[in-house]
Amino acid sequence: MKFKLISSVSFSLMLARLKQTTVAAVGVTFSITMFITLLSFMGGLNDLLDGLITKRSPHVRLYNEVEPSEKQPVDRSLQFGRHYNFVSSVKPKNEMPEIYNSRKIMNTLQHDTRVAGVSPKITAQVFYNVGSIDFAGSVNGIDVDAEAKLFSFKDYVTTGNYIDLKNTPNSIILGKGVADKMLADIGDLIQITTSKGERVQLIVVGYFQSGLMDIDKIQSYTSLSTAQKLLVETDNYITDIQIKVNELEMAPELAKEYARIFETNAVDIQTANAQFETGSSVRTLISYAVGITLLIVAGFGIYNILNMMIYEKMDTIAILKATGFSGNDVKNIFILISMTIGILGGLLGLLFGFILSMIIDQIPFVTAALPTIKTYAINYNPKFYIIGIVFSIITTYLAGYFPAKKASKLDPVIIIRGK
Image (cartoon, rainbow, N blue to C red; front, side, top):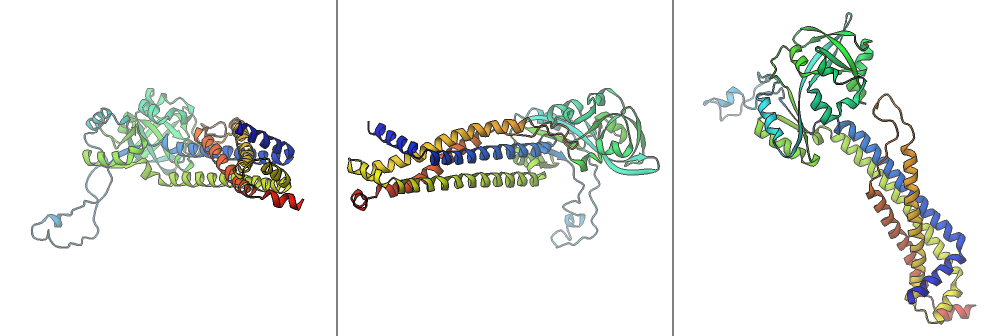
């Protein structure tokens, strides 16, 4: 009964100051709307930029690095092994970039429950020949089916069919930048020179566009068998094993484990692309900072409106106290006013934020650098909406608490005597 009476008084006071109450609610609504829209848009942008890496890059990559031996022959000698030896002009180990026992390694990985898939790859440095001009690049020999399944390869083949790489012997899919430099059309024969000096002609069956211009200017793709022919190697020759794991967070730990077990170099996606994670964290932090600032500004608006309401309704407060309302009851009345503004404005803000995000999600966004993107990216993560409404309630409660506490301490005798 008491709550019903307090609610009735709160509602009457809000109606008496309907214009100011509406302005406060609109402020909260606008703040929450922009908070949701900003975080959804920035979250979509982060997903888009991170996806350029996570969708195209292995979570763990096994390879053999060209590097000098940790121990030189002098360190192994009985006479000088315990001395401090300084060796200059150290040469790399006389080893090929090939991963030995690659088939057994891939078979072991495919039976690991933590691994979602494995894709072999061959990286070959080449020169693209255009008349009398050569320019450097790289050709990746891939397992076409595995690459399409694990790394969405087919989504980035903008012209031609990716499966032709598997079905057409001696074929190549050129990076869009490479194709533009060579003026190569689908069906044309191009010539490349391998690192071993072999000149090979390949037929162009498609264009590849990753969204990273620097990569598209040098990189192209062939099948594994074609790459092995280019390098005059056997069908067991593999330079990279690409691993996709079930839990991305496990990649650094698994990279260390696989490097130790298989005696190869290993790098995880977090280490190889640390700058992208840093950029995403900074953008997210800025979004939260701006959104929370908007909510705090709205909170100050509510604070000012309730302060003015208390000043103008002192006689009402005096009458309430004179008729039996305690200081705590008066405080609850004004807190209820603040919370009503906050909850109503917050819920409307969530709705309008969702609608505005949907509108942005339908706006066309076409760029040659991102062929797979057709509209602006939006992330509809429920976490944004939960954070928005919770922070809205907290902000409006604090904005109403201090004026309500002030109202609860007013002495009705002093107010009436002043009247």
